[in-house]
Image (cartoon, rainbow over all chains, first blue to last red; front, side):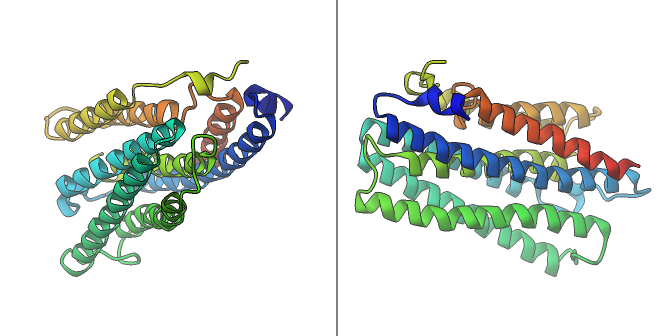
Length: 199
Length: 85
């Protein structure tokens, strides 16, 4: 712990220590999230590859539209990282624009997922308890979508703080902490998109 | 260890384009008549690593964070191995 604190304590020692504490807390939380998703992902892989039959995902899932959704989430990670870069330069305007773009992209992702769920349930007849494929699909993508939803809600709060001018060249830790969570959610989707939709 | 976080500015745009290109390759590979499971897993792992190393600054931040993150991945996978028993 001491090493973590001393590693980044700059001239503004107290602020540096505080920043590192917050980041350490977020990384520990993300560590627990890794464990959570690892369990789900491995359960999925074990169930899938031990099943005598398993539908090819592309037969019922819409890969092109989800690939587009993956693109939106990657862009949103990029807008977050650019927002952080902006506020570290003291550019509050670009911070606000970047966070607003991220919000739009996050809401777009959720909207497309809602459309996809609706299509799968009403047209394809897929359900949580109808088949192992449906159960694992909705569990994995549902828990991820829930994380995006939480991210969007936190982003609303971070954006409102940015609009009030709470962040500055010397105070941007809130943006960085939010960014870590958002990137993690993007990272999990990168894995899920591959194993649920493509393989 | 110095405060490298302040001094390193990775080329985020290059990382972003790499992620997009790798995603396009991934989707493209599924249309090829070749066994693609391993290729897709490797490409996906590269993308995840790019996000963690550059967007999440693991490459430049304290090694403790990388330790927590990678440690959790290893532990998560080891614990989940009971599913194979």
